[in-house]
Length: 170
Ligand SMILES: [Zn+2]
Ligand SMILES: [Zn+2]
Image (cartoon, rainbow, N blue to C red; front, side, top):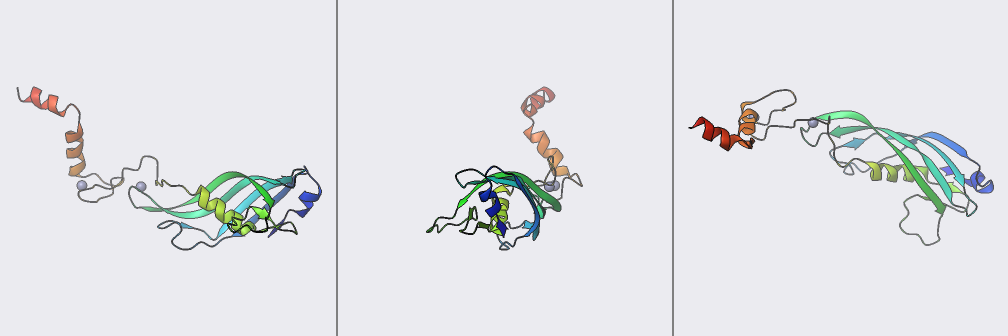
């Protein structure tokens, strides 16, 4: 829990909040990737005169990723900046994503961090930008090894293959 009460009482005054936040996700949420239980949250916030709390900061959380191309798993931190507004909770809000404070100025910070991680989780995951992936024929990891299928394929896909054949077959 985080209280934004003092911010509401002093509009425009800037407050800082730095904390490790424990989150827990359903194991299928990011499958086959997984997010560490403890995220680092660092943020500043202030209230405006209308009772809207403006939040700006970053989240940093260790993750275990599986590469989309080569299926290799690797450890990397998910880091992202965010900017959000937290409003007063409405009486009958069913879809509570955490971006609201209650009558006492309390915010469910776990819920907020959880939703931020879900929103900012990468959709394309590569172990490295130039990952070569797996050979479709024999399945070896082309980052580590080369196979005959790849060399052949490059030959077939060469746009000048026809021309080269013609020249060679003259
Ligand atoms: Zn890869
Ligand atoms: Zn191969």
